[in-house]
Length: 507
Image (cartoon, rainbow, N blue to C red; front, side, top):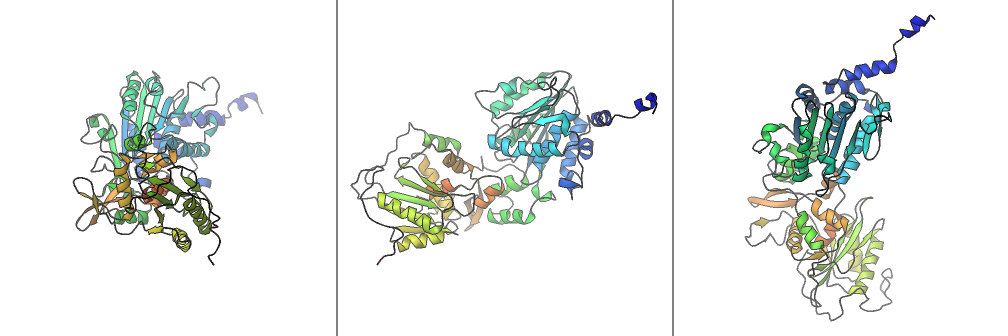
């Protein structure tokens, strides 16, 4: 073949570069081109959902080197937010050489286990995946000369170290600053991030996404009525209007949490902000204060010694035994087990009772817990079966008497919340996460709003662990227990020795 004919053969890589470069202001076009819709992992998918198309189109139409593009999206669950976040990152990097940026989220787990996992998936599926490498902390150009200048980093925020957000400059090129679950990003990070908006002749893209869990803070202020609303393009997405969401599950949430206007449904389904300050049932400040080693709230010899037992229901869950004497839930370490059957767990409870002689043992009797309750009763232990879904016995607490609880679980969590103001707990990350992760809504009870905490299965569906630790501690508040008349020392030494065998059948 003549040499001049060979030179006219198009280079596939050059064609790919030129084609993708043409999408520099067309994110939707890039997404349609870069992925093999309808094939392989995308079989049955024809492209972005309607709301995703609208956001991608808006970004393309609003992008300008003269004004930062600030887009705020509040939404319910299950709408495909993480996929859209991934497409924006891949489009921004693919269509502008030496794009730099930072992606953060409300927590390190959200950033690593959700946002970045989805980015890795969509990077693998992209037609130009060979242009970039993805690690656990960044996506960057495989060209060694551009590795440090063509990249977007995953950065967990720290209120005392904000350098990653303050030093984001890339004059004449493109900057991406993206928040996932933006309600949980503190105001100081938002304030520092505005420093990236000062570069002239630069395409600055600042999209923020999240469930509207708080009606205060900078994410809330991006929307109508907020002091920064005039600077943002706000969108609110109702999960019910998105084709891929589980409509049956949503209907259950609406029924369980007291209708469409309950705070839980407003936040998790409708994508609108709650009526009260937050849907977090127990504040982080309250938990951190109780876990502070400086706090001394030791129990006395005459406080009741109570054991709470949350029984595991699923493979990833654990059975937790937590002990409390008065205001002290720290001095005796909890016990946590995975993989025990009901007989084995009952034996562990019996062994612990031999050691401490509890005044009361409260066990979650739902599901597998019923078998544990039955076995403990057979062993003559001071056990009380607690049904989370049962009617609340202490209907109201608080000085103003206006707090009503929808069921027993709501009640014991409410009593525990009041106790945390003066109680002390161990500095256990799992316990602290459980106590602060549970959200709540309202349902109607006898013609008035009654608090109902988020169900375990709902927490698991939004990617959180079952709050086994939190429920075990809450169970110690199931019923009032008469003060003990024990005179033994409050320590971890056995109260008495015994040849007791919890597996042995009584004669």
